[in-house]
Length: 209
Image (cartoon, rainbow, N blue to C red):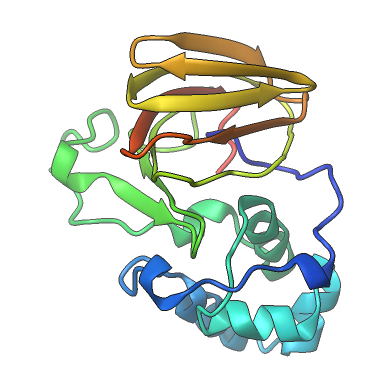
């Protein structure tokens, strides 16, 4: 799923959605990583919140995994902390040295889950230094990426389930086997309207994480 520079304004603080305990995966939530990185960089909550354009209270809730973390907000926090979003990918054991610059074995995929959002990304590219990025998104029932846009282009194919896709003011409902392509500069959004997880294979250029 293409994620880079969110061009839309952040939701009003009154519209912020707190994630319920059953929505949170303690192993996937990244609040502790946010806090540790902020502390390593000797930045206060206020420092990061101001740079990211969010409130101190909201950032504090994110660090404690108590609020929903939209994709665009993570990008703004990453920028404030001076890291790429790939810093938050959780990696398994690395593959064999002789192949890991070309091959990614299934058990070695790096993963990124968004707190309370219901979307998990698996990075299939061995690195992000090339001209494109390959990843699989698993979108849980009812999950919604919210609107975002960025430079480049992307394409994909629905591997399983149903995908609602919005590109600018156009809406499409895709089923397994359907594919798509669009310019990433157009505001776009995807969601899972069904009651089973949706899996989507994405190709994005240039790499955005």
